[in-house]
Image 1 (cartoon, rainbow, N blue to C red):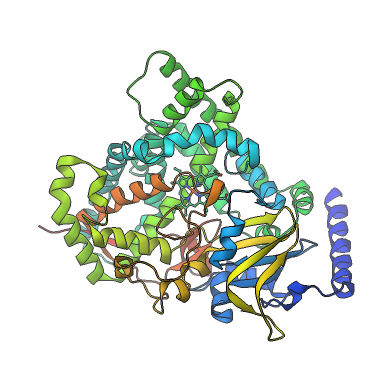
Image 2: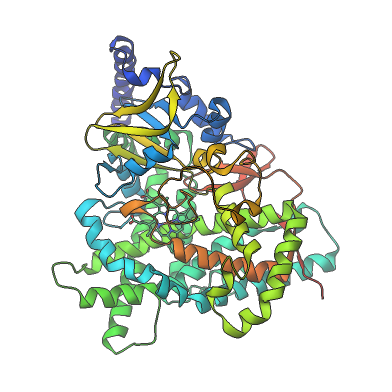
Length: 545
Ligand code: HEM
């Protein structure tokens, strides 16, 4: 019965909203080009049923060419939103003075998924306190020391895929069934990498895919949690992505199997994370000086911190869930797209492998991350940057203006009435969607061939004005105080993993189209009958000789 009242209330609110839209005075934003107001839902459903270039921002990009500002109208009083890829405007949104923050609606969704108190959802002073403890573990030096952990994880995957490739070769089959779903395996491997490098523990997720006993229940718990979140992308969830927080709170009151499943796995994940923190604190107290994983460094930093800055045990536990959440699907998708691109461009794959093999002996001897520099391995370095540009697995990032402000633009914006402006007013409450895809594909920044995959572009400096950036002038990790904490971790993890995989295997293209599916992360998907299945089926063959 309560569901009936809630739904009736929502329908009434919707009708009221339509009336308000008709009656309100036109604003400046009405002059900014963008998809028709009614298309936000239809467009998002399109995003769901995704085609090859199936991201909504991608479709808009084709429609609106090089427009660096697009206006959207969100459903249910969620106000005006701006998709922005203009570098000057991005500098303003992501500067350190905090005049923009995560929209409350996104925090509301996030808290339902990953719980409260983690670094990702925190803002302002609370965020500063958490980051102070976490940042040192993710700086360049400590991350460089994680190389042996990443190598260990990469070799476990090489071993597993070697067995599968041998079986494939023996059966002589090269049909769809013989393909390896590299995304699934890389997901397990990413869990193992985080387990080893971030938390100093063996999770055994890759071993489990080969039929071994579970080493730790944490791997199962997080896999269930992340799979449940992956299933989240329904029409309703896309709808609420653009909705105000009060609406999200109401919607989640409706009895819902998905939310119940997420809450259940989140509880188990938190329980397992708490046990891990307690175990690690005990080890430090007992004089553990050898462990160099991120959690040990964070806990040591915490113990040495002034009490007013120190994180409590439950705050520390929340950070573990944040790291798993932020660092698992992202890296699995990123490395999957890298392998896909190599499979589609065999000539490039050969050249990258040649460079890897030329450096393999030195790498084995020194095990030093310097080998991955643009000086030692220019093509490998350029390839990774180009994958980052071409496959922005995190495709947009939301912020909301916390006070009235103005956004200057690097290029004039042509309004619907034909006039041009070089700045746009941004009233308090305006939601900004930093459009990472459009930025990464901007011809003004990356040149006329921005739509093509060309690693060599990285041999010369980029021409156009760049957005603030922590890596290669790209916006994938955003910038400012809330920039990705794990970007160095991700780059080294990918370098080590790709080095070992390309060194050992040749990748052949799938026998079907691979689609870009816009979940929270841009994941690969293929059509299986009528259903879209999240996977990346590649043929993997051992390198001969
Ligand atoms: C291709 C891979 C990755 C991409 C594109 C990426 C991108 C991002 C982005 C855009 C944010 C900002 C989110 C927001 O505030 O809304 C973020 C935050 C974060 N990321 Fe990553 N990330 C990646 C991999 C990783 C990995 C591997 C880790 C950890 C091992 C990680 C840890 C974090 C953490 C802890 C935050 C929260 C930072 C804060 O709020 O201060 N990320 N990431």
